[in-house]
Length: 189
Image (cartoon, rainbow, N blue to C red; front, side, top):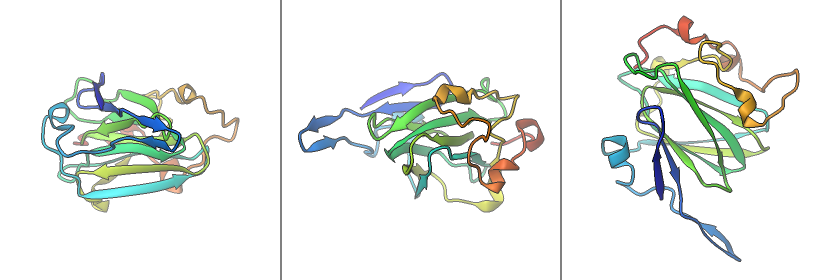
């Protein structure tokens, strides 16, 4: 497993060593302790979530406030997504900055998104299956979201390669009505 520290402190990209033959492919997705050094702590996952999305569906940008902030290890088990993390930590030098990359069943890459980041993804294929392990339980009262098109953050969704024309992405009502970073207010975590 190659572990790459990314420009936003705490954010980590994992690229598995793949074993391919005529039967298919095998790779390790998780082993206790493999992220401890990069994450700066031992990780314990308490909840695992799965979503299946149509191409053009955008989910996010979601986070949970302290004391229920979640760290997430995210991967695309099937299909492909453009996965985005935004630093929303109050005292971070990279607060409001974002990072994105493609996660797919082909590349097997995963993102470790530490507590204090908002997370979202755009499904690039029909039936995109996203699995994510979480370090804290879902806590509705601590939940927050940021609008996917917040000009202050400036996520360049065109980098995903997706062309949704004039209609825009498929959104939930909650995500369509999400506040901007400024409207959501500080502190997040």
